[in-house]
Length: 260
Image (tube, rainbow, N blue to C red; front, side, top):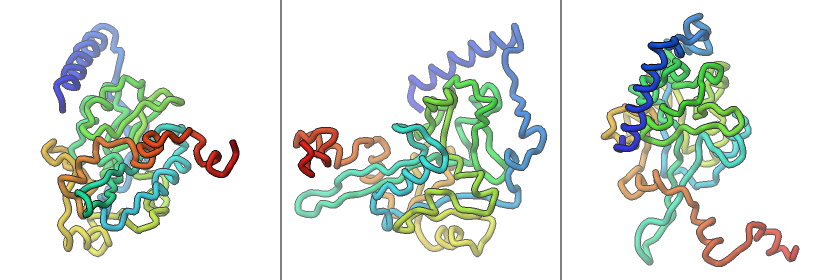
């Protein structure tokens, strides 16, 4: 975590402690979790995780679109997306892609900083946000070392990937996994040693993003090397960069069809 984030969180806690001491302004209780609602507790017999096989990702963004539709994510914001860049030197150059989402860390930095109990980890490992309890302070957004939380511009509270917990609870796959064209995203239960994800973890070398943070991410990558990991902060797609370089207008595709 960088210095600015630490100072932000430290200052925020000082303010919250003062407010809570004087007026009981906040509580760490969560009504749904305290009531043992299955949507909040999850399935304690499972431990959900995801593997992303970068050898299979073609950067089509089908996962990005499916997530936005499934979870009603506002236009211009994303719970998951795929960054891309060129790696190598001419003539040995190729595109590389890095799908990103909340890492559903086993030791999530976002949970202990939440002053209302809105952010918590279910017993099956899925980290969620209760939008009814979240007041949008943004402390979890700053604590996340992966920058995979955002302020939903419509709901005005924190939003993030939930592994499509509402689908998982019904026995379905997350929308991004269901629609992955290349089969790059594999989701499953690590407690089931016969599951596809368990077999992949047992037979292929995997790594995680920012392992040095010690948050124990539960999103694993096959084929992640240092050059690709640099994509974590690359948010502009090559196509967008090229459009800017050659001066194409925002409606360039309509223009190319002759709709001048």
